[in-house]
Length: 436
Ligand code: IMP
Image (cartoon, rainbow, N blue to C red; front, side, top):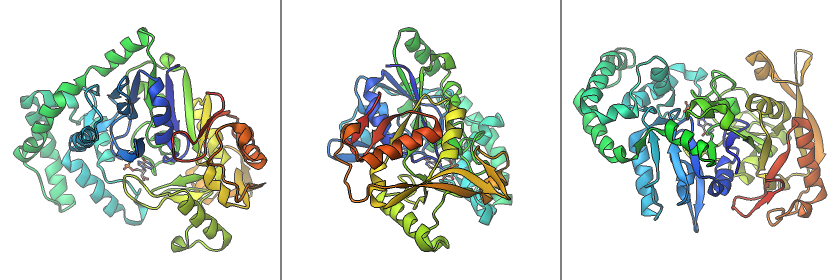
């Protein structure tokens, strides 16, 4: 199996979990390269659905090594709980490897995340409040605490003390929040160190050796292209490099070792949190009216569009080919897995946004200025649907209704990328492998 980056091509929640779960068994290593427990996806285990936030999906397969790369930020309490949950379900975590260079989410990171959002008021980002942004902030400012610091109690204490000398005054004086003592934090974190120590590894070396030995790696992206710190809708983004390039920096494996970049695109688009979303169909509670509000509600209910991590209702809209083309470029997509196609079986006709209009100008590419994206009016092409035909039982492309195939092929035409996998339902077997 060629080493592959699996990357969200929209604003996250594209159905990466199902596709990773489906293909992970074909790889020797499955590696998370960015983000933290802001991510969340469900994997199917027997007749149960399990929610994973930090653990790479490879954990579900005993011959696969799950790796948490250096680009990830780790909340150790959350990771330990997740390991316990998996073990209680009979899933062994003994193969797990955790990069010693990954940064640790500290309690004050979570406090700052919540307090910053409150301070921003109307301009908030809509974060998951898991401390992700503040942890990456410390990493870039060279003030972070890493997994390897847990290995030496003296160093850990010293780093916590240094951090608190800066964090406590801000917590207290700027935000009016409680402060921490070194003891308090050590009491919580040092026991984590004892549990996690056996899993800590030099993961870059391990993965490069795997590449030399002809092993295959699946780089499991979290969030999505439009939430990438550099290529997303900044500042309404997460704080890491979600795009395919992040797979190299977030693991220490050079880009030449990557053979394939599989983008995951939903047959429509959703986003959680704030920020521009040109094809959004506003819900009635957000001021939406008419057919658009009806279509938005229908996408949300038929697609079960509620966050795994936060339970929030996701904003919904039609497929956006401008974004599709942009994602293809910034990630160097080789092919795409199109997910949740069955959700569109509810509609008489289906719209696809092929360009934006703003101030009398047409944009068929991702606009340079964010304000254009905020005010962009989508230019739609309306395609006939396949309403009432249940496609969830289709297992080959030929079995799909003619209009469904036309929709898929139209998306290929307007995004310029082949759709090698088409998903027609939540279960593993509800998948059409066209050219995998
Ligand atoms: P943060 O990652 O918690 O800092 O949140 C920043 C932005 O990314 C917010 O708009 C979140 O809703 C969004 N976000 C973070 N993780 C995910 C995810 O897994 N799926 C979709 N959106 C996400």
